Length: 348
Ligand SMILES: Cc1cc2nc3c(=O)[nH]c(=O)nc-3n(C[C@H](O)[C@H](O)[C@H](O)COP(=O)(O)O)c2cc1C
Image (cartoon, rainbow, N blue to C red; front, side, top):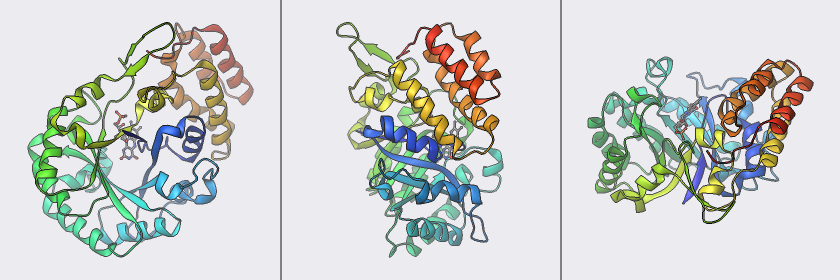
């Protein structure tokens, strides 16, 4: 099984990608950038373009970045998507991913992200246009979709459409738009979707996404300290008809909560306190190159702490001190304090 780091707006930027790949990335095959909006007059915002520039990639760890980092494009116009894909090709990328899943109203109201799933005639024409225009370019197109906008009843039509095109990889987030990111993933509907996609001749690699979070993860210990990490969703996926069709699992929040999750799922060792501490230090250094103001670097790290505080027992007071830090010195003093004061929980 391959593991991918999901695209996450404002989070899976190059400081995180470089740091994560260096420390925990041996078993993470692909890192997706947060979506880059291909604006109609063919430009990216400077900040978004910066995230994709090869000069910001740690080439010592991404030795084949063209295949290891996948820029995700947000677009609903053939011309702008094609322009964006060619730009990414020029930068050395070999695959771009089309965002068909973003549930935010600001995005869907302008018929982008999962908003493209509503008008399936338009979606079909759009895909026809981009695959046709890019057929001779040295870049492949993958899709990240949901099962529908309103309901699972839409899935089959979507799968029929996707099956018509030479999609490199089809990632299915096992929810409909109306679910946003809440509730249990719809695994039966995912199973039906994959079967329907194959029945209609779709040959793309299949990637599962949704709630491989590490939360409620069971650690089956064989003897003290050792154990196998299993994830309840992966266990359920194993029982589906389509399981053998899944070649990759994309993880978002789970990797933010536990950066070592891919290693653990593959049978490797659990996250240690010293690794997490080192990771946080490198992450800080990485964000310092990306964000000029010290306070904003700290705010960025606090986004990570929201996912990481679960590793520390009885940590409310220590977390509060981290949240109050307004300088690098205060921040690191508070971080050192939580590591020395609170019991570390590697799996939870
Ligand atoms: C804060 C946040 C930002 C996200 N940004 C993106 C994005 O830019 N592109 C995208 O396709 N999905 C985005 N997603 C969705 C994730 O890629 C993923 O599909 C979702 O988190 C479910 O996977 P998980 O349960 O492993 O976290 C985002 C999700 C969150 C919570």
